[in-house]
Image (cartoon, rainbow, N blue to C red; front, side):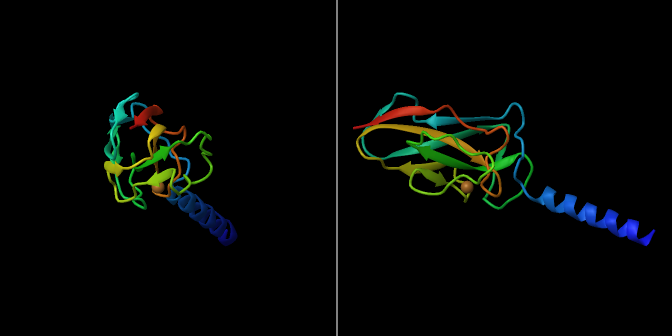
Amino acid sequence: MRIVRSIVVSAALVLLSSGADAQGRSAPKDALLYFIWPQNGATIKGAFWCRFGLRSMGVTHAGDNFQNSGHHHLLVDVNEPLNPKEPIPSGKSHLHFGAGQTEARIELPPGKHTLQLVLGDADHYPFVPPLVSEKITIVIK
Ligand SMILES: [Cu+2]
């Protein structure tokens, strides 16, 4: 009996630890990620404030593991699809807003650019299915 009980306890521990890992979370069905600004097709002179909109979910810090919440990521000129099994990459074209920012000053070289928002969980994984905004195209003068 004692052996059986220790197996049950270790199985419960495995379940707990996988529950603490935020990977594979799903967003509420009515969640919506969108650009407040700029709008698709906008022509902008110089640097601009990019404003992130999120409906039916909350914005938290990276590392904060609350239900129905995440932090914003901005993809700039990214064409490759995200791998849902990997954390969102980090770099000049994959910006993380881990302090819970809902707007950011963006400066891009003149020309055409695409922008897309992705919501990430506490560990920077996309939700399943991914919660992404429309991919917009802007022109920097
Ligand atoms: Cu992140």
